[in-house]
Image (cartoon, rainbow, N blue to C red; front, side, top):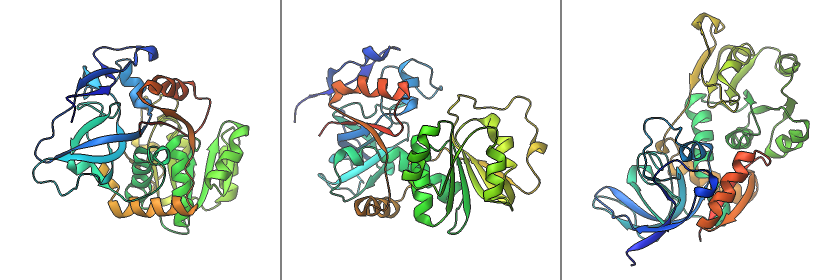
Length: 329
């Protein structure tokens, strides 16, 4: 085992071209933790935010970025029930924020945030999954408790998690309404599994009410906090709206009054952890992807750590919906 590995380790905020590779010590494993040989990882908006030093207080420099990874177990600490060579996924738990992340050949994580799996899917597909599946599954199963036969609006459907939520909700047996502001993306929503792909314009409320005249059972809000009042108005009493993200950057509502929530409609949020994606659920999704019944939208694939800068540039340009993946295998 060599003493060093290749990684992108930042000591200060940098522009995209500052995502350069260097040699750093291979991290030591400790009791309760797992060292993973990283095979692939997805690129996330939060990593671009961290890169420029605008993350929340839980992020600190120096840091190796990367909040998710798939790979194989390289070493385990005492008390860990995993075997070297086992395929695993990991995400969240401070990864890439308060502890060093996946922009490296190896990463060490708390075993509680490691999900073992078995699959022959290519690493470029597997690398797209951890954060998308964890968030989409968590919002639908934990926050909304969506049931077969119910109706759901995915407001901001062309986001990476939105596309994944569409696919999972369809597989669950829900009726899926999904929005985009770009007419050219309607076909993408259909391909992801939306029963009703619709434009997010001035006619949105009227269109949704025509599809679900008694009100929606559930809604996922990805666009902005300020869009919540309109989304809440489309949901029936005892239905639930879950705030997940803010594609527009509007995370709060100025002068918000709880009385703006329609009587009986429930409002929740989701930020979740790896524990919200049990190994059995991950296995179910992997089998569905292998069978072609669950669609995963991958925007681009980049090879090696030297491709991270190009992957972040592709993400921040916003030109291609779907997940940008870096493969190290």
